[in-house]
Image (cartoon, rainbow, N blue to C red):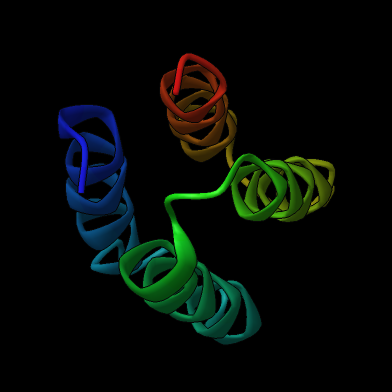
Length: 80
C-alpha cells in the first residue's frame, strides 16, 4: 500500500467518525475504505473510488467542511 493510499484511508477514517455525517454516507465511506485496502493498487480501482467520492461530495446535505475534506481525499488519490 502506498503512502498516498494510507493517507487517504486515514482521512476517510477521520471523516467516518464525524457525527454530522449522514448514516448512508458513512456506509459508502466504509465501503470505499474497504475497497482501498483490498483493491487500491490498480488505477482502475482508484478511478472508481474517486468517482464514488465525487458522487458523495455532490450531495446537497453535506456541510461545506465535509465536502472540502472529500475534495482533499480525491486530490490525494488522483496523485497515485
